Image 1 (cartoon, one colour):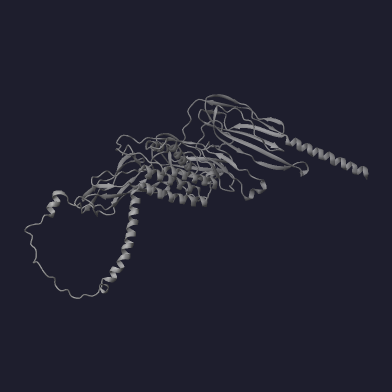
Image 2 (cartoon, rainbow, N blue to C red; image 1 turned 60 degrees about the horizontal axis):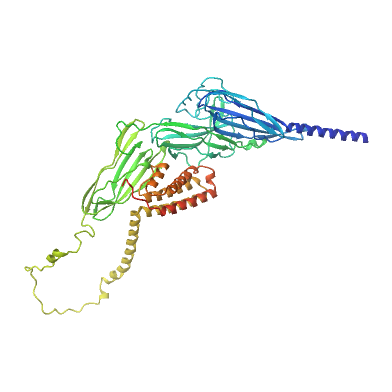
Length: 628
């Protein structure tokens, strides 16, 4: 029995050594490969380069990449799936890990480029991939076909179609990936200045999502004014589409209306997102790593508004109508009336600027404007309301001329002028504190105090009549009413002071802007408490802009950030202070949709910076405008 037991022990020891040796060998097993979706491209075209490393027994490390100086790296995506399998006898688990690096490269110059093998070190051993040759030919980048349907695939451009693109060719606005990719679609690629461009970002994925995608980088929209077309709170509902013969789930991540502010080529940047793929039924397949995907930028060529037949004045692109009204058409001289003008139409209505001309005898205070925007059918429209307090300083009839705004209809390419109806205001009576109310002086006073010699007087009475006994004054019928008049007069004086305070506040745009800014800060604090980043940064932006407009005495809604900085410097603000204020506004717009901006500490920090900017603006006194 002893020799048999010894033999079994030796056999078990040898088996353990074999298993350990097999595991050690597996730990040093690695495969490194490098491939491209095509090896011949034109200058300006994008090629997809993939470097994949599979390792058994250890986690894949970061490989060293070849020289890519001949290309512009548009995006970089990394995924690291990991799994386990059992080794000899089904007892020893062996880790199998992979690293997949996907680069979108734009060819910069013509030539033949030899990409050296990618290399990686695993447990002291160095592994190398295959080499790759890419040929870049000179030529222009082919223009994309505008207006493609999100589920359509254009015809191939020729050549061999690689295995990782759909058989019918690449999608417009995307680089195909067999797992997931982003696609950006614009409804027009050659808009006019101020014309709406609807931009939609789609997510195509083969696997399901176990959570909402996290937007790690929002598309840049420099040169555009952007309005969101999707509600802030919504659920992602996928649709099914075929790309070639491959089924995908398609989600709408973003849809915005972008209005170009200048002519020329403008680029809508690429979005980056992190995708939590997998579902409840994927638990047996092991943990699924998040996928990182980046889209491609989209360029639109903005056309200038035609100069032939163009009316003079600041142009509005889209439909517009103007309606002017007075709350009263007849007032006492010196009393204030409210002049209201409503601009209703499509496009950037909030950038409409109106000015009331100077009318002798009328004094007008700085106007207040209010905007109400909506997007029925994904077409941005709205109403901008202007209100002036107008005071006639002397009696008479005043004619208020019509307001006019030139318009350009991009659909028909024609010009028109939106015009309101003229108004008439009648002021009656002498002005309070006017010339007629002044005390006479000099010779005029002497003439008024001279006794008329022809004046007739009644008979002179030398004795007074006997007066009858009268009732006591507190028994008179008017006594209760006189007694109640004192509290009434006291309440009337308090109401009059409040009314005068409100009138002074309405007449002073700085005080009105300060109250509006404090109200918006309160809204921002509530949004920060509820975690609503979009409402939080919108409220901070509105507060800063309101105080700037109150200090400048003019609207800044139509100014770009660069124009606003120049305008602040022109009105007396120091260059570093103006630059810091504009950068703060740009930062609020950029982080409004980002995941980092939604964190509690970041929103509290932004609230503190906004209070500092408002305190700085309270000390700023603008010099008179040269346009005034």
